[in-house]
Length: 321
Image 1 (cartoon, rainbow, N blue to C red):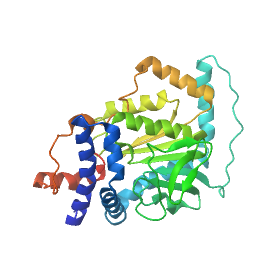
Image 2: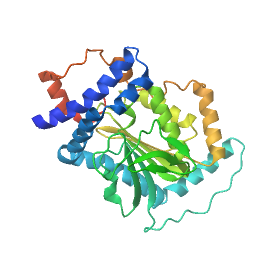
Image 3: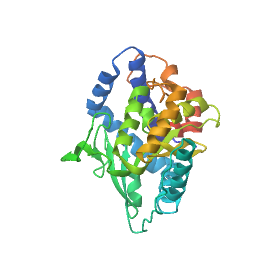
């Protein structure tokens, strides 16, 4: 049973997401809304502290499940032959389009070799627990500890090299990461086109054959938000990414996509464009983009008993409101 402290922390997180979306729904400029939010140090620090406490004191098994799930996807792909299976799929896809490509030699990554990972919206660097296998760069707009670097992913430059000023990254090197992780990140953004920009940047940062791992919260039954997930998959494909795996767990959707060679990116994107057209503005929507109730901001958010019970039952959907 959730404690009172747990409920308060959960409400701190949900309130931030809700207020951002309400501002956008009221007609405020989304870029200004985000800029103001990123500059609100008091709100960011409270958010970061709440998220870290929830993850390290209250979620435990559930928290480890999604962190562990992502790590297992990385492990299966790089160390257990998954990348070679994907190369075989590439050959079949190209052949259907009348293109002949060679199968690369089996990729042999030693157990001792660490995979370079960018963890966006890291909060407290949970993937640091796998430091023997992963070389993680954790970034966040509100780092919860000194292991995490400050960086607004929506605004950071993608360039020829990574540039850091003290504890803040101003630029990230293109095609320099084998994995980019969005774990409970995209739901934070108050508008679909911001999520699109995040995924687009991830593609620019990934090396060829690199993975994009996305975890998005959902405690409802598998089919309830199927249209949303279909739209996200179309968006990922439109950007030239190829699906590696998908899983609906009790509390989240897990999507793993890879960046294939340029010819495959073109073929995948071209096929998807025929289905969805060039309009990509709203592909990365979430149901709350249309259903958030506009309310006046108040200092204290009171919870009804029904809302308390709902949080107890589905608190793992924290970024989802």
